[in-house]
Image (cartoon, rainbow, N blue to C red):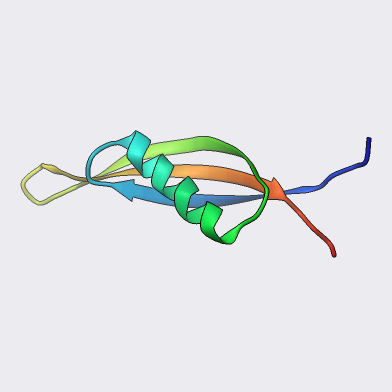
Length: 71
């Protein structure tokens, strides 16, 4: 088995509907520019609250790992 190296980055996805959709948005966008995505880990969840106390956005901080290529 050959050795592999993975890079981990943190992204913040947002959604007006749910934390699940916020996390999915982060992974979806990352998959368009990064190759060999491996694991996504939810690091933190929070809410953006509007002036009237309403939830404006759900935010998911997501750590995404992908295989690091040196060639």
